Image (cartoon, rainbow, N blue to C red; front, side):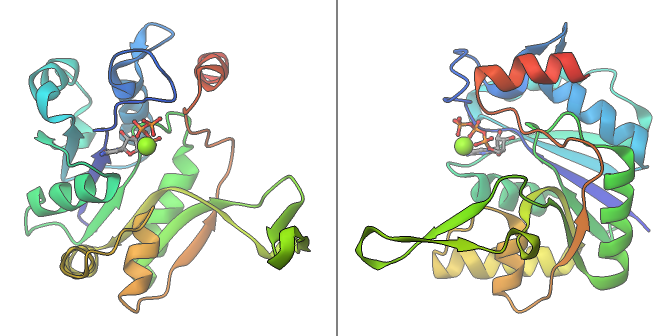
Length: 224
Ligand code: CTP
Ligand code: MG
């Protein structure tokens, strides 16, 4: 199974508010992006890795990525787009034909477990499309008409995370189709599902925290 890794890291981290791209923010002495890549490198062998950076930061990202683990394969840094979806689309285009699968993982999730990474890759190899996800720990309610809300059954709900993995051509064609329709999705599983494929869920092991707010950064540093 030949796997390429695509890392959307082209966001600015406005909610984190550090004044530098979120992927470069220091987590206990190491940039967040490197923390995340170290986790992935320890989990599996990748044919190649494409990191999407803010367009004006490509060179700085290249320097930050010098000397990363050999298990990430050949590393490219490419300019991301205006949205996460556009960034991933550019990453998918940059992946070579040799890969059977593409795994997509947000730079903002440095705590992903090796078990979760491997299980998502295996599920995608078998079924074509898979995502990591967790059950909500809070009760969940939904808006109804007239300012009223109603309880949902949380035992049937999933909070979608990354990694997500797909057969290469399935993900590439779904991205081309979404761009042609001008359709925006918040994650690649939704985008691939809209092209007609079924998504397998892999329940996350451990706490797959997404660094979004300043408090998440402190939590991530503590949990590392
Ligand atoms: N991302 C990207 N290209 C964009 C926007 C986001 O590659 N145009 C990436 C981010 O770098 C991040 C992941 O998508 O790794 C998830 O996005 P999010 O956590 O929202 O990060 P930011 O967009 O950077 O944060 P914010 O929304 O607070 O600005
Ligand atoms: Mg964002």
